[in-house]
Image 1 (spheres, rainbow, N blue to C red):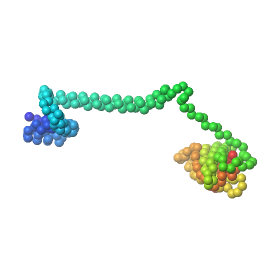
Image 2: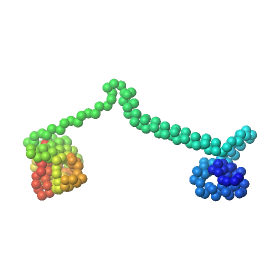
Image 3: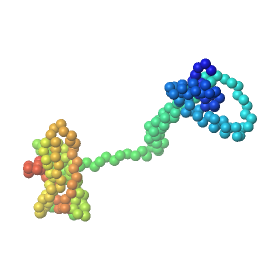
Length: 237
């Protein structure tokens, strides 16, 4: 053989090259990524042929054909596999997108789930007497002339109350605290927080959670104050 060709890979794997040809091909293999890739695909060929020989003692001898044609056929097989893989991926994506639409289409008329509209929150006037003990309470407030809007939900617990505050329209920078004012007895601080200067990372509305030893029935109102004592908002029942 006068030179080394890429198609020598099959002969090399099958061991039909003589010593000189094998030496030249191995030197070529060190610098040829194409042959290195093909070698990974052909390295099991001798074992496969040996396994076939166990169950097919006298296989028909195929007609010789150029190895270049074999590689062209292998390239076609690779392209066909890539196309099939892409089609399968596209089908999977379509199924993911169309699944919810198909589900809605097969549901009987009127059986599609409908989200319930949230009940409106109405600010009530302050009560002159405590509510029944042990029940959840809603506090809401928005004073005239102020941009602040606040809502407090109080849930009873074994040790007092969980308190959730939703507050919008509060500008910074300032440090604030939420105070629970009872019908009788000393007030209690529920939570405190800081509001950064305009342009800082701040959520509006703010959602703040805290707790107090007072039960919902013992709380007359909440107040939002600065740490210096300035009253920013009164949140009655």
